[in-house]
Image (cartoon, rainbow, N blue to C red; front, side):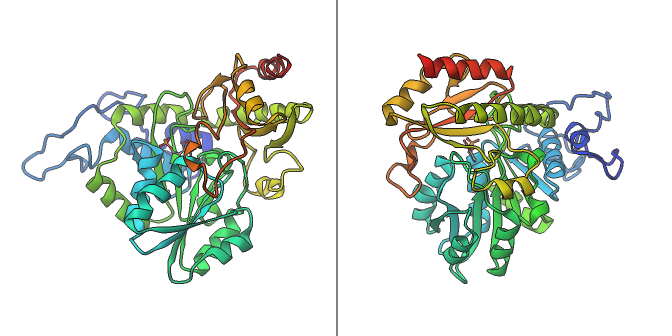
Amino acid sequence: MSDTHLPRSVGFDTLAIHAGQEADSRTGSVAPPIYATSTYRQDGVGGLREGYEYSRTANPTRTALEQCLAALEAGTNGLVFASGMAAEDTLLRALAKPGDHVVIPDDAYGGTFRLFERVLRPWGLEHSTVRISDPDAVRAAIRPGKTTMVWVETPTNPLLRIADIEELAAIAHDADALLIVDNTFATPYLQQPIRLGADIVVHSTTKYCGGHSDVVGGALVTRTPELAEPLAFHQNAMGPVAGPFDSWLVLRGLKTLGVRMERHSDNAERVAEFLTTRPEVTEVYFPGLPNHPGHAVAKRQMKRYGGMVSFKVQGGEPAALDLVGRTRVFTLAESLGGVESLIEHPGRMTHASVAGSALELPPDLIRLSVGIETVDDLIDDLAQAFGA
Ligand SMILES: Cc1ncc(COP(=O)(O)O)c(C=O)c1O
């Protein structure tokens, strides 16, 4: 399956629906088949059909997703994994070696920090944390000759800080380092890091790409085929691949990514505005608000601002823990990016692993993944939770 049937230049939503997904050549099946097979019949030894040999190495449903994501991220190659963490681990073990140094954000998904701190530091990979919204701080954190990667999330999880991708790409490349961008929060619909100079894009496809809270997955998309080569080798050698059914679910989710992100962005804007009017709220973190310190950069490099909103409440941790238990439409749960709205307490939930580190979060912080429900219901729900 390929996208050779598409006109040379088509829009994002056309790619999301068609890239990598030409109708099945045998039956004409419009939906890509789920190739539930571990192995492939060979026409004589080494006589592979379209290169398929064994499903850890490649599977046609996975190939369809990999091609679709590469097209959406404007990269050359896509690789998909069993989870976002599997994608990150593969990237780091394939492209870094013990003794190297990576600059990482001082606000990031807790699991990413845990991978650097508890898994890769003992392996010999050093890191230092930096405020990625401050390009001078990133430049200063680079250790010449040792830093091989600058790793950013933008917007960050959960404080929604914004990194200037174009500027950080120039800083990283001046130091012969790669710029890696975790694009999970923005998605390629809102932001395409490779077009802005990044070398590799990382995704937890569990989130907006899948979009329905029914699958765990991860992805890498590269700027060049040369970067993809060691990643594909490690993907096969280590085996953290996405299965065909999981690949199919993410592929199906991607078809509606554009319309979902528009609605997530509409709803999050309304929810963020509502939160700014509440006396119980002491701070709102949303890059779409004009007073957000990253607003100008976000406006330049993102199409809209996405569906994530964080805020702090009066009354400290007890008040925050109380509030997250009182919503009825927002579900108290980890994760994000699905059609349904979720609420959580990062310090005790998604980011418990950063306690005591430079990434430790304020105890009065609450994170919302604003879904695509009727927005008035979301606002009424928060109002009743505050009012209770
Ligand atoms: C920004 C970000 N990157 C990576 C991950 C890890 O992805 P997964 O949970 O699919 O392993 C997450 C998970 O929450 C995330 O929020």
